[in-house]
Image (cartoon, rainbow, N blue to C red; front, side, top):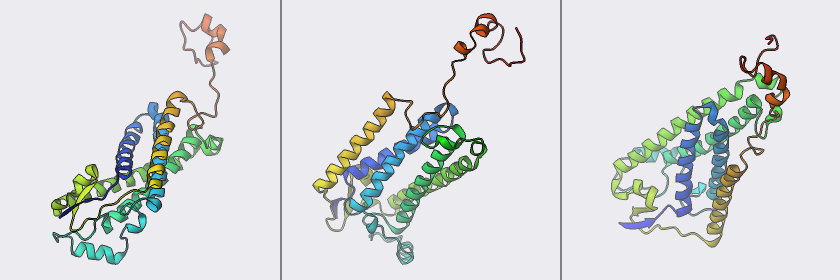
Length: 259
Protein backbone atom coordinates (compact mmCIF):
# COMPACT_ATOMS: atom_id res chain seq x y z
CA UNK A 1 0.00 0.00 0.00
CA UNK A 2 1.20 3.47 -0.91
CA UNK A 3 0.57 6.62 1.09
CA UNK A 4 -0.99 9.05 -1.38
CA UNK A 5 -1.63 12.76 -0.89
CA UNK A 6 -5.30 12.93 -1.93
CA UNK A 7 -6.75 16.04 -0.25
CA UNK A 8 -4.68 19.18 -0.73
CA UNK A 9 -4.28 21.81 2.00
CA UNK A 10 -6.74 24.28 0.38
CA UNK A 11 -9.35 21.51 0.13
CA UNK A 12 -8.94 20.64 3.80
CA UNK A 13 -8.93 24.27 4.91
CA UNK A 14 -12.17 24.83 2.99
CA UNK A 15 -13.70 21.70 4.51
CA UNK A 16 -13.01 22.70 8.12
CA UNK A 17 -13.94 26.35 7.61
CA UNK A 18 -17.19 25.14 6.06
CA UNK A 19 -17.83 22.87 9.04
CA UNK A 20 -17.06 25.66 11.52
CA UNK A 21 -19.22 28.31 9.90
CA UNK A 22 -22.14 25.95 9.28
CA UNK A 23 -22.01 25.11 13.00
CA UNK A 24 -21.91 28.83 13.87
CA UNK A 25 -24.85 29.44 11.53
CA UNK A 26 -27.03 26.93 13.35
CA UNK A 27 -25.96 28.21 16.79
CA UNK A 28 -26.62 31.86 15.88
CA UNK A 29 -30.07 30.97 14.54
CA UNK A 30 -31.28 30.11 18.03
CA UNK A 31 -31.75 33.68 19.30
CA UNK A 32 -33.15 36.81 17.60
CA UNK A 33 -30.41 38.80 19.32
CA UNK A 34 -27.85 37.03 17.09
CA UNK A 35 -29.74 37.55 13.84
CA UNK A 36 -27.24 40.05 12.41
CA UNK A 37 -24.36 37.71 13.23
CA UNK A 38 -26.32 34.89 11.64
CA UNK A 39 -26.62 36.93 8.44
CA UNK A 40 -22.88 37.68 8.31
CA UNK A 41 -22.07 34.03 8.90
CA UNK A 42 -24.41 33.14 6.04
CA UNK A 43 -22.53 35.47 3.69
CA UNK A 44 -19.24 33.93 4.87
CA UNK A 45 -20.57 30.47 3.98
CA UNK A 46 -21.56 31.84 0.57
CA UNK A 47 -17.95 32.92 -0.03
CA UNK A 48 -16.74 29.46 0.94
CA UNK A 49 -19.31 27.90 -1.35
CA UNK A 50 -18.19 30.14 -4.23
CA UNK A 51 -14.61 29.01 -3.66
CA UNK A 52 -15.60 25.34 -3.65
CA UNK A 53 -17.55 25.68 -6.90
CA UNK A 54 -14.57 27.28 -8.64
CA UNK A 55 -12.31 24.67 -7.05
CA UNK A 56 -14.56 21.98 -8.51
CA UNK A 57 -13.59 23.11 -12.02
CA UNK A 58 -10.10 24.46 -11.39
CA UNK A 59 -8.70 22.43 -8.48
CA UNK A 60 -6.66 19.22 -8.34
CA UNK A 61 -7.88 15.73 -9.14
CA UNK A 62 -10.34 14.25 -6.63
CA UNK A 63 -11.59 17.76 -5.83
CA UNK A 64 -12.87 18.25 -9.38
CA UNK A 65 -16.57 17.77 -10.02
CA UNK A 66 -15.78 15.69 -13.10
CA UNK A 67 -14.01 13.25 -10.79
CA UNK A 68 -17.22 12.69 -8.81
CA UNK A 69 -18.45 9.27 -10.07
CA UNK A 70 -22.14 10.04 -10.31
CA UNK A 71 -24.47 7.86 -12.33
CA UNK A 72 -26.95 5.10 -11.53
CA UNK A 73 -24.66 2.33 -12.71
CA UNK A 74 -21.76 3.61 -10.60
CA UNK A 75 -24.02 3.72 -7.56
CA UNK A 76 -25.24 0.15 -8.21
CA UNK A 77 -21.69 -1.15 -8.65
CA UNK A 78 -20.58 0.59 -5.47
CA UNK A 79 -23.43 -0.85 -3.40
CA UNK A 80 -22.93 -4.36 -4.78
CA UNK A 81 -19.22 -4.29 -3.91
CA UNK A 82 -19.39 -2.17 -0.76
CA UNK A 83 -18.01 -4.94 1.49
CA UNK A 84 -14.93 -5.62 -0.62
CA UNK A 85 -11.68 -4.84 1.16
CA UNK A 86 -10.10 -3.20 -1.85
CA UNK A 87 -11.65 0.23 -2.37
CA UNK A 88 -12.34 1.14 -6.01
CA UNK A 89 -12.80 4.89 -5.53
CA UNK A 90 -9.85 6.91 -4.28
CA UNK A 91 -11.70 10.20 -3.94
CA UNK A 92 -15.45 10.41 -3.43
CA UNK A 93 -17.51 7.29 -3.99
CA UNK A 94 -20.82 7.55 -5.94
CA UNK A 95 -23.08 7.90 -2.90
CA UNK A 96 -20.77 10.49 -1.33
CA UNK A 97 -20.75 12.36 -4.65
CA UNK A 98 -24.55 12.63 -4.69
CA UNK A 99 -24.57 13.79 -1.07
CA UNK A 100 -21.87 16.40 -1.74
CA UNK A 101 -23.64 17.83 -4.80
CA UNK A 102 -26.91 17.93 -2.85
CA UNK A 103 -25.23 19.70 0.06
CA UNK A 104 -23.78 22.40 -2.18
CA UNK A 105 -27.12 23.02 -3.91
CA UNK A 106 -29.20 23.01 -0.72
CA UNK A 107 -26.66 25.18 1.10
CA UNK A 108 -26.89 27.79 -1.68
CA UNK A 109 -30.70 27.74 -1.51
CA UNK A 110 -30.60 28.05 2.29
CA UNK A 111 -28.48 31.19 1.99
CA UNK A 112 -30.63 32.77 -0.75
CA UNK A 113 -33.85 32.07 1.15
CA UNK A 114 -32.22 33.50 4.29
CA UNK A 115 -31.23 36.71 2.48
CA UNK A 116 -34.79 37.09 1.21
CA UNK A 117 -36.35 36.42 4.63
CA UNK A 118 -33.90 38.84 6.26
CA UNK A 119 -34.77 41.59 3.79
CA UNK A 120 -38.51 41.01 3.45
CA UNK A 121 -39.42 40.40 7.09
CA UNK A 122 -36.70 42.30 8.94
CA UNK A 123 -36.12 45.13 6.47
CA UNK A 124 -32.38 44.49 6.60
CA UNK A 125 -29.64 43.64 4.17
CA UNK A 126 -29.25 43.95 0.43
CA UNK A 127 -32.91 43.19 -0.33
CA UNK A 128 -34.40 45.35 2.43
CA UNK A 129 -36.24 47.30 -0.27
CA UNK A 130 -38.64 44.33 -0.46
CA UNK A 131 -39.84 45.14 3.05
CA UNK A 132 -43.00 46.85 1.85
CA UNK A 133 -46.44 46.82 3.40
CA UNK A 134 -47.29 43.81 1.22
CA UNK A 135 -44.16 41.67 1.39
CA UNK A 136 -43.17 42.13 5.03
CA UNK A 137 -46.17 40.12 6.21
CA UNK A 138 -45.10 37.13 4.14
CA UNK A 139 -43.59 34.19 6.06
CA UNK A 140 -42.96 32.16 2.93
CA UNK A 141 -39.20 32.72 2.77
CA UNK A 142 -38.68 32.22 6.49
CA UNK A 143 -40.54 28.92 6.36
CA UNK A 144 -38.64 27.93 3.21
CA UNK A 145 -35.37 28.84 4.92
CA UNK A 146 -36.21 26.64 7.89
CA UNK A 147 -37.34 23.76 5.66
CA UNK A 148 -34.17 23.88 3.58
CA UNK A 149 -32.06 24.13 6.74
CA UNK A 150 -33.68 20.96 8.06
CA UNK A 151 -32.97 19.20 4.76
CA UNK A 152 -29.38 20.41 4.98
CA UNK A 153 -29.06 18.85 8.45
CA UNK A 154 -30.29 15.55 7.00
CA UNK A 155 -27.58 15.72 4.33
CA UNK A 156 -24.93 16.52 6.94
CA UNK A 157 -25.99 13.47 8.96
CA UNK A 158 -25.86 11.35 5.78
CA UNK A 159 -22.37 12.68 5.03
CA UNK A 160 -21.08 11.93 8.54
CA UNK A 161 -22.70 8.48 8.45
CA UNK A 162 -21.00 7.78 5.12
CA UNK A 163 -17.59 8.83 6.47
CA UNK A 164 -17.87 6.49 9.43
CA UNK A 165 -19.17 3.65 7.26
CA UNK A 166 -16.17 4.14 4.99
CA UNK A 167 -13.90 4.08 8.05
CA UNK A 168 -15.60 0.91 9.34
CA UNK A 169 -15.52 -0.96 6.01
CA UNK A 170 -12.17 0.24 4.69
CA UNK A 171 -10.22 1.31 7.78
CA UNK A 172 -6.81 0.28 6.31
CA UNK A 173 -7.23 3.02 3.70
CA UNK A 174 -7.27 5.66 6.47
CA UNK A 175 -10.12 7.59 4.86
CA UNK A 176 -11.11 9.24 8.13
CA UNK A 177 -7.54 10.34 8.85
CA UNK A 178 -7.23 11.79 5.35
CA UNK A 179 -9.73 14.52 6.27
CA UNK A 180 -7.09 15.83 8.68
CA UNK A 181 -3.79 14.80 7.10
CA UNK A 182 -4.64 14.72 3.40
CA UNK A 183 -3.02 11.29 3.05
CA UNK A 184 -4.80 8.08 2.19
CA UNK A 185 -3.43 4.59 1.61
CA UNK A 186 -3.86 3.36 -1.95
CA UNK A 187 -2.62 0.51 -4.11
CA UNK A 188 -0.54 2.84 -6.28
CA UNK A 189 0.78 6.33 -5.67
CA UNK A 190 -2.15 8.61 -6.56
CA UNK A 191 -0.82 11.82 -5.02
CA UNK A 192 -1.95 15.19 -6.30
CA UNK A 193 0.12 18.35 -6.69
CA UNK A 194 -1.07 21.94 -6.88
CA UNK A 195 0.12 24.20 -9.67
CA UNK A 196 1.03 27.84 -9.09
CA UNK A 197 -2.37 29.10 -10.28
CA UNK A 198 -4.25 26.91 -7.83
CA UNK A 199 -2.00 28.06 -4.99
CA UNK A 200 -2.37 31.75 -5.87
CA UNK A 201 -6.15 31.46 -6.28
CA UNK A 202 -6.53 29.69 -2.92
CA UNK A 203 -4.32 32.26 -1.17
CA UNK A 204 -6.25 35.21 -2.65
CA UNK A 205 -9.59 33.66 -1.66
CA UNK A 206 -8.32 33.05 1.88
CA UNK A 207 -7.23 36.69 2.16
CA UNK A 208 -10.60 37.81 0.78
CA UNK A 209 -12.43 35.62 3.31
CA UNK A 210 -10.40 36.98 6.22
CA UNK A 211 -10.83 40.52 4.88
CA UNK A 212 -14.59 40.01 4.74
CA UNK A 213 -14.68 38.99 8.40
CA UNK A 214 -12.47 41.92 9.46
CA UNK A 215 -14.63 44.32 7.45
CA UNK A 216 -17.69 43.23 9.41
CA UNK A 217 -15.82 43.64 12.69
CA UNK A 218 -14.72 47.20 11.96
CA UNK A 219 -17.90 48.24 10.15
CA UNK A 220 -20.70 46.21 11.75
CA UNK A 221 -23.59 48.25 10.34
CA UNK A 222 -22.68 47.75 6.69
CA UNK A 223 -24.93 47.24 3.68
CA UNK A 224 -25.21 43.49 4.32
CA UNK A 225 -27.09 43.96 7.60
CA UNK A 226 -28.13 47.64 7.57
CA UNK A 227 -31.80 48.35 8.23
CA UNK A 228 -33.92 50.37 5.83
CA UNK A 229 -35.39 52.18 8.84
CA UNK A 230 -33.60 55.05 10.52
CA UNK A 231 -33.04 54.67 14.23
CA UNK A 232 -35.20 57.06 16.23
CA UNK A 233 -33.85 58.73 19.33
CA UNK A 234 -37.01 58.86 21.40
CA UNK A 235 -35.31 60.76 24.19
CA UNK A 236 -34.52 63.73 21.96
CA UNK A 237 -37.93 63.64 20.25
CA UNK A 238 -39.83 63.38 23.53
CA UNK A 239 -37.74 65.57 25.79
CA UNK A 240 -40.75 66.82 27.75
CA UNK A 241 -41.97 63.29 28.36
CA UNK A 242 -38.51 62.20 29.51
CA UNK A 243 -38.18 65.11 31.93
CA UNK A 244 -41.71 65.09 33.33
CA UNK A 245 -43.10 61.58 33.00
CA UNK A 246 -40.36 59.03 32.47
CA UNK A 247 -39.79 58.51 36.18
CA UNK A 248 -43.21 56.83 36.37
CA UNK A 249 -43.99 55.76 32.79
CA UNK A 250 -42.06 53.87 30.16
CA UNK A 251 -40.29 55.97 27.56
CA UNK A 252 -42.34 54.36 24.81
CA UNK A 253 -45.64 55.21 26.37
CA UNK A 254 -48.95 55.16 24.60
CA UNK A 255 -50.24 58.50 23.34
CA UNK A 256 -53.35 57.81 25.42
CA UNK A 257 -51.41 57.96 28.70
CA UNK A 258 -51.26 61.43 30.21
CA UNK A 259 -48.92 62.68 32.89
